[in-house]
Image 1 (tube, rainbow, N blue to C red):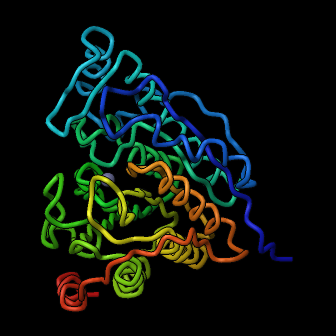
Image 2 (cartoon, helix red, strand yellow; image 1 turned 180 degrees about the horizontal axis):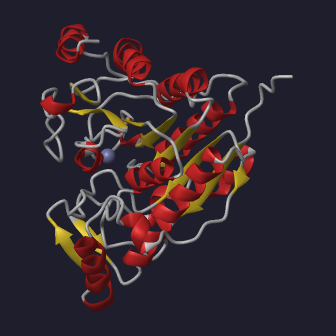
Image 3 (cartoon, protein in one colour; image 1 turned 180 degrees about the vertical axis):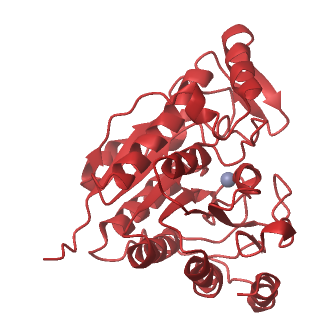
Length: 340
Ligand SMILES: [Zn+2]
């Protein structure tokens, strides 16, 4: 008999020593979430640090050894203008974050659980093959996606609804036809990449959806129906990864999108359903940004509700107080550019 109740797993890596004075990417991001973790009825998985060669499936060896040396010998300090910081534990924390993400994806690939959520920091989607940047050291989701390919999958898709463009994930997969990437992000903010025509050599496979300020729950639903759905039908991924950034919430202190927690539930549920239709249910969420601790806790709750595959819709009662901009013209422009 078909079991409608999903088995969900998660890993949790708060990295309490990876912090820097007055920096928004701080351990306190998870303070509201942490006492709620037991209420999600998901199985907590153990993990070990990623191995050097596993990180090297995405990053250049000189970045890995260079970051380790900087952390051991020069930390604490700032390594780019974002600003991205490192402490003496940051290299170890980043290896653990990638390992915790792979622990989730391997459990899903091996069929031990239906789906999973890697709740880790430091985040990863800005980290490029040769460069740590944007509060990110190693690209957790890209490392886990490459690991899933190494385990035998032939095609994987990463969907990124963080408020910022995942330039690192795009760079990692630009020439890799086994991997597809779709990012929604506020246009005009850090890191400045992610326009529609960023990757003309990879139409239908690297898909950027730049959003105007205050785009939220209605716009992301249009994107899911009009872009993500046809992209999945054409690319036929065997597994979906989601870079889940809750800085797309309307009250995030760093950005100006218009998502509510119900909107995070809606897009997450749509992705879980797509994975059910096309990927035998295989989907792994990975925490990226989100700088208000209440929004992070609600967003994670929304994802767990979506992963459960049953039960009521998640709504934290935090609707965006502003109306959303019209998105139809840009939606058509993106669909036309890719031929969806
Ligand atoms: Zn972000």
